[in-house]
Amino acid sequence: MKTYQPVESTKENKIKGKLIDVSHITKSQKSRMLELLNLYFDNVKEHHFFKDLDEKEWVIIFEDYNKELQGFSTQTIMDADVDGIQIKALFSGDTIIDKKYWGSRELPRVWGKLVLSLIKEFEGTKLYWFYISKGYMTYMLMPRYFYIFYPKFDREIPAFEKRVLDILAFKKFGLGYNAEREIVKIESNYYLKKALGHITDDLLSDPNISFFKSKNPNYYLGEEIACLVELT
Image 1 (cartoon, rainbow, N blue to C red):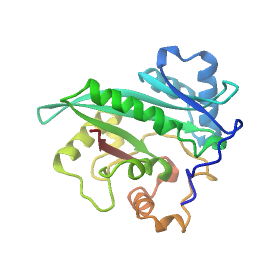
Image 2: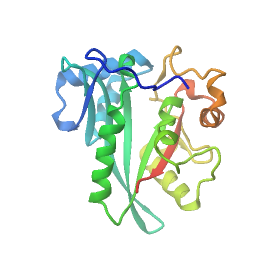
Image 3: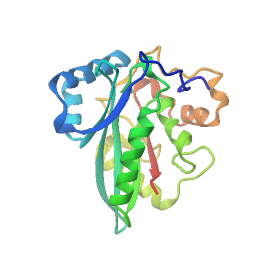
C-alpha cells in the first residue's frame, strides 16, 4: 500500500503535534482549520464545523517549523450506560493533515500519549475508542495499530461491543445512524474531494480496504463507518 508511508524527515516536511484544550484555540487557528477542511472536502458547512468544535474537549494541532497550523484532530470523552455497565469512550472527530505532511508519525504519537493517560485515569472502567470513517485511510488506523477492532473483515462483533457501538453512535448521531449497516449518514456530512481517497484496484488487494469498500460503498458521498476499539 502506498499511503501513509514514512518519508525522509527534513525541516520543510516535519510537523510537531501537541494536545491543547479547545478553549485555547485562537481565532486564526480556527480559520486555518476550516481552510484545511475546505481544501480536502466538499460540503463543509462553517456553522456546523464550529458547533462541532465547541462540543470537543481537546484538539491535537500540528504545526510546521514556522509554527503554522498544518493539521488537527478533535477529541472528546463520551459516557454511556451499556446493560448496566458504565463505559467511557474517546471520540475522535474531524481529523486532517495537509498532504505535504502525510507519512508523519505525529498523530499516533500524540494521540497515543492521550490514550495512555486516559487508560490510567479511568482504570477499572471499560474504555473504548469510537470514531467514524468516511475514507479508507482513516479506517486503516485500526488495523495499523490494533489487533482487535470492529467492524473487521474476519471477526464478528461480540454482542456487548455491538451494544456499545450502537449506543454511542445513536447518542452522537441519532437517526443518522443505521444500526443494521453500522453506517452514519447525515445531511451535514462532508465528503472527500473526488481526487482524494479513491479506492483503486491495486488497493483492493488489502483485505481491510476491500472490506471497507464493501461495508461502505457510498463512502464517496460522505457516508461513514462507525468504528470501535477497546483501549487496554
